[in-house]
Amino acid sequence: MTGILMRASNLTAVYAADSGQDVPAVDDVTLDVPEGQIVGLAGESGCGKSTLGNALAMIANPPLYVVGGTMEIDDEVIDLSTLHRGANEAHRPYRGSTVSLLPQGAMNAVSPTLRLRNLVVDVMRAHKPDTTKAEALDRATDRLNMLDMPTRVLDSYAHQLSGGMKQRMVTVISTLLNPKLLIADEPTSALDVSSQKALIEMLLAMVEKKIMRGVIFITHDLPVLSMVTDRLAIMYAGKIVENGLTEELVNNARHPYTSALLSSVLDPTVETRTKHVLGIPGSPPNLANPPSGCRFHPRCPFAMDICKTEEPAFLQERDHDVACWWANDHAYETVPMEVNQL
Ligand code: SF4
Image (cartoon, rainbow, N blue to C red; front, side, top):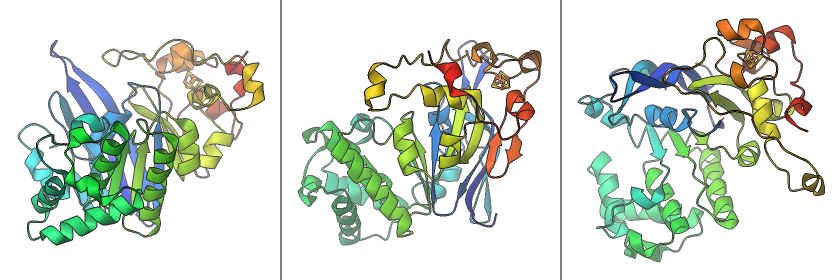
C-alpha cells in the first residue's frame, strides 16, 4: 500500500427489496485513494456512486446492507461485510475521524433544535468526549474562516440559514474531526458559483495542509471534477468501468461510457450554440436484473457479440484501468467521441 491512503476491495452493497430480492447497487467494487489526492467518482444518477460513498463512510441503514468487502487504511484492514443492521456500532470508532461523510441534502442534515454552536460541541464530544467547548468552537471557527463564513452563524439555528449556508455548515461539521478520508457527496450542487469556489478551495487547502489525507468527490458535474480531482473513477450500473489520472481520462477516454459522459457536457463556447449534443441514448438498467456481459452493451455503439455474454475484466495500461472489450482490441486508442454526437 505504498502511497495509497485507502484501498476498498471487493465492496458489495445491496438494497433489500420488498419482493425479497436483494438489489446490488454496488457490485464487487475495488477503489484506491492515493495519499494526498482527490478522487472523483462520476456516473449517471442511480449508478451507485452515493451508495458506494455511504458504504465507504460506514453508514448503512436498512434497506441498505453492505454484504462484502474490506477497507484498508493506514495498514488497518476494516471488514465492511459486517456493516448492517445491529452491527453499525462496531464501526462507530472509525466514523468522523478515519472516514467522514459530507452528505447530500444539507437541508435535512442539520438538527433543527440546536443552535449550531451547541451542535458543533455535541458532534466533537460524541467522538472525542474530552473535547472542551473552547476546543470545539476553535475548530469550527477555523473551518468557517476557510469558507469565508462569519462566525456569528454559530449562534443561529439551521432554519435561519440559506440553503447554501446550510451546505457549507454541513461541510464544517463533517470536517471537524480532521478525517483521514472525506467522502464528499455532491458537495457543490446546492451552491452558487462563489460558494462552490470557497468550498473547493477549502477541500484543496485541507488536503494540502495534510489536515485531511484524501477526498472522494462524488458528482455528475464532470467540469467540476476535471478541475478539482487528481484521479477519476467512472461508475456504471453498480460497477467502476474506468479509472485513471483525471487528465488522462478526460483526454483519452478508453471506455465508451466515459466518452459518452464527456460528450454530454456542454462547453461554454460559441460552438455550443450550433452543436447538437445527443446525450447518452437509452437509460441505465434496472439493477435488480442487469444486462448480461457488459452492462453497458444495450446502449453502446461499439457493442460486439462477446459484450452481450462475457463481462470484460480490467485491462491495465500505465496508470489507467478500463473494463471494455473494445479497449482490449484497441490498445491505447481513445474512443472516437464523434460517435456520440451529430
Ligand atoms: S465491453 Fe462492449 S458493450 Fe461494453 S463498453 Fe466495451 S464495447 Fe461497449
